[in-house]
Image (cartoon, rainbow, N blue to C red; front, top):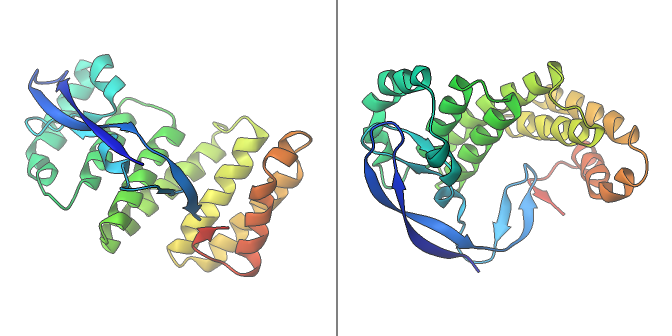
Length: 221
């Protein structure tokens, strides 16, 4: 079951202090086809990331401790501070992940990290039944994941197989059927290059790739 706790955050940009609801424990069972977990009890995803409603700084708990450079702070104040009203919308916690993704991009973090932030933003938008935002974040995520593969961020064969599959599934969810099929075939090729024990450990991925090529579904069986 998901349990939450109250914690304090100190904004590294404007020094505001505020209370947040953080995740203390959770458990999951199964997932959607784009890896969104199914949790026992409430979905805690939106509670992993927090935002300062004064300036717009957003991130995980560690990000609040690490802070950011003056260059990034200037961008936060220019592009995010005018949008802090978005963070106060009760039914729109996905903006926290969007703001974090933009900050990660300004920090020149790996495309995989930026893409993962947009992907999780799409999960939160789905949980809030906001299809428009879900699709927007899926488009942003898939672009970063493709970039990560193109520039060689995915050094491990296992990572290339998983990310190629995820790119295919995001294209499928965006109704880009030809692109999806192309990427599922690429994911299958990457999977077939795996050797033991990775092939055994990722047997579920091979099954899922075949399933999405033959009878696409929104769940991982």
